[in-house]
Image 1 (cartoon, rainbow, N blue to C red):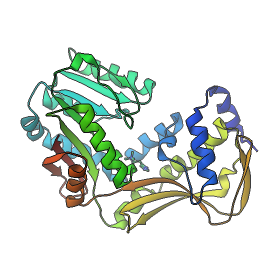
Image 2 (image 1 turned 135 degrees about the vertical axis):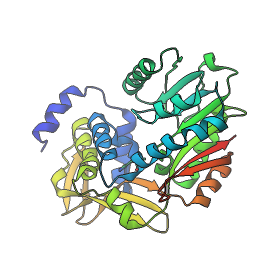
Image 3 (image 1 turned 45 degrees about the horizontal axis):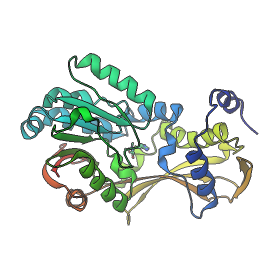
Image 4 (image 1 turned 60 degrees about the horizontal axis):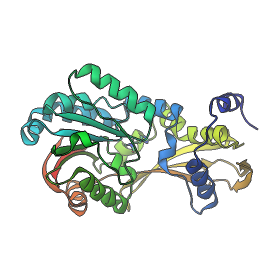
Length: 320
Ligand code: AVJ
């Protein structure tokens, strides 16, 4: 039973990503059930994430922006002028202009998997920083990639804000940091945002807000599956759950079946019992020493760090 709005949207979506199909089908068949968080970000999911960043409970975005604004002169002093700034997963970040305005870069290289996002943010930054060469790279930064020839020989500053690294487990995070060191080359610097471990009374509401925006963001994954993979998941029988996993130091998001149900996706039948969940996201948090250890394990030497007054979030500068 496709809902009207799912059916409508399906006509717009003529192309289905085979990797989405494969991840959903294997994730629903696995125990525990789990679908990678990267699939949240269709058009609607990206809009909902933007709305999350403005929520009163969701402190990371505004905290990181404030830290960056305040630390910009100190960062500029350590980084020096003339580097090529390489941003991993540029999205539609409002933080980038703060950094570019401070460090006087020789070029800006946004890397994003979404070509549409890339072109929009490249155009916006081009207008804001006339004369700054912008070289967008449409790529999945989780895989090895080659930087544009035009910045050959230019020392690099990698920029990885938002605590996006938290979506990965520590092992995968170390792998990504090592790959970034490879991509950026000798003498590179990395400015990375990492969310801190803190009280679950702050963490849980940040992922389970009163207005229900995060719930809609999580549940949108089921709508997306129905739209793009000809699914008939009864979305209203699922509820959003955010919980703090103390042992793993991470927030987990799940979609929990309120009652037992059967559904099909891409012609395959599935069933889920009452109270069972589909695990949709991990957001790992790091203490001050954890964050430095993570960087070191990934081949980076921590050189400086900046936090807010409550130590909710940290920006770290490291050298390859
Ligand atoms: C974009 C991965 C940093 O983990 O805080 C926000 C995603 N999920 N609310 C995060 C997210 C639910 C966000 N990251």
